Image (cartoon, rainbow, N blue to C red; front, side):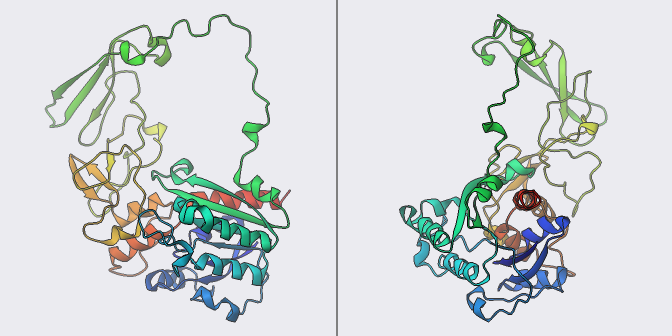
Length: 387
């Protein structure tokens, strides 16, 4: 499929869709660094620049899909919420104008959840109404990047449109498997429903924490679980279950595996002498090789769990409020490579020249879409087209 990308940024769509053989027929990006990146990675694709001048674009190839995430600042709850009164918000209607000119079969549009309440819903309603006037059926849904394999909380509104019918768009954005009613039957009837369970796990499990020092300098924390009525629920035993070392080379102190956490640091290299980013999922082959790290959202080390807060463009600043990582009891900002991974890009995708400024990379990544989410949408469109 041929597609036209506007507000292209660093082209999450192309990174997500190239494996399907889809071809970009043009980009539209005006920011300096993202434009340099597009020229570096995709020299054969024309960057038309300002999207408001779309009537001057000369595209000979057919356009099967229009994709773009128009600027979100006018809709963001962190902004002034001017909606379509803001020139940046009006680019959503420019997107509709481009749709009207090229008339692709599909369209994909992305923005922040704040667009749903901007202007008490009238701004988003105006955009959807414009799609309907052009003959597009649509479906929209809020998707969170952390549910697609990256360790970042990043909720975004995605609108998928299909020329002439709303049902294909709905099939792309919504899974029908859980609505079909074909629930798996139990193997046999049982009268025992929850006889061995207790009302509250907290009332029956007690943990103790002991610090041990080893001759090699590692500090070890051992957790003991006392047997109780809820043991069968968790397969717990009154023995040492797992340990976590506060430096490197952790090990399990019994036959039980460690509790899975959203980071696997085992056999990974380092970037700029700092540990690599938290991964969303543990490599089972390396259970026991886990170095515990947690994301923080401010310099004071507020722990947010194993999933990063939403990346933003202001991460480029020296005092930015974007996600940090706690390592060896210290809090540091994420490296550009870690931010690339949080958005699903290949390592050093934004490192396009020698001594490439980190600030440019942070800003471009914070403004980008998450690659895994775009891949999921693209693959579902592709599957529908192949039916």
